Image (cartoon, rainbow, N blue to C red; front, side):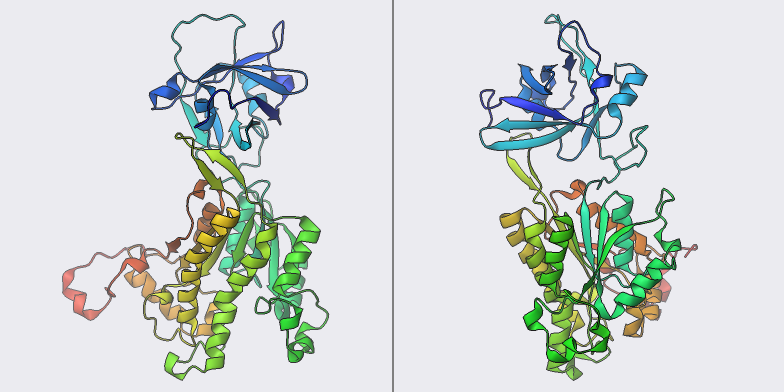
Length: 468
């Protein structure tokens, strides 16, 4: 438990000093907080801002006040007492960042609403305004964003496995970009030329449009074959394959090194790739080579990516909750899985169901290991069927979409954007306590025990969505 003696100084960065209302001496501000905890009701601090942007704290129970601020979120007063013009200036851009320095511990909080304080005050009981916690994501700096939108501004994401504009990987990239993240892409080497050419010629422009009307920008596209960890793993027939000609540094280790050289660090890692060369074969007819190939490309590739990218992933910051316990909040990693990992899906063979089961099991283990060692969160999304180009290789994806539409609790076709938005949430500070989780984004199909479109249920009058 921190005490007042532990707390020394607070730095303030990103604050628009022109908007501060000065008095005859250094400007003083009163921070208003509200909490259902009675101890926080008494939280009050007078802050004196010096010319060097260092502020000395005086007040009552300030530590508890600081610890109520959520990491990465912005605190805004619902009824600010300052003038509207000053309010707009203060809320513009990034919030003031108060960094607490105390005996080897550090914390970063965002406080955007302040109220000028008279230099003399009495002990008259004070009434605290209620605060609203919200994450900022609007591009406009003229007004605060409403509600609780996802804010990934200043974050950088690497998405492995994008080769066109109609799969889940592309949708995830768009949602992350819409939330403000910088996008890096890893594309399978044989598909690299077609992807980059299409991107350059504007063939993807329609699908690059973000909610604000701008186009998603991809900072860089890297050649990647996640089946190979390092150059020593690449067999001679692949090295001499004409589909790999002209590309270099495409093993997992080399790509991670290139990203480090080009950008330094990343915050978000997305694994959106899978391959089973014998996916159309029943498991009993799958060869050892085909089975292991599915495991290698679809599940171990995620282990390898995380292993090599973790050293350049930002670990995040340390925050305090109301009990003053330390909570990790850092980088985020996620993958894509499928319900065949735990349910029988005839036709999804070649070891792919086993690969997805391994991926989900690895997600839990990696969540523990990456969380304890690096403060990295690891989750996976179990997405429903989507008619992407890659999925059509299975051969019966349209049938699965029809089955889902008929049997899922929500009778509608799943949109790739819905998976992308779920990924953006998992990658954001709003999901800072979520790790080791399989998140189902499939209109609820995973919850069903039977197919209600079966004739045996014909007499049960099961409700159907007339709009589906």
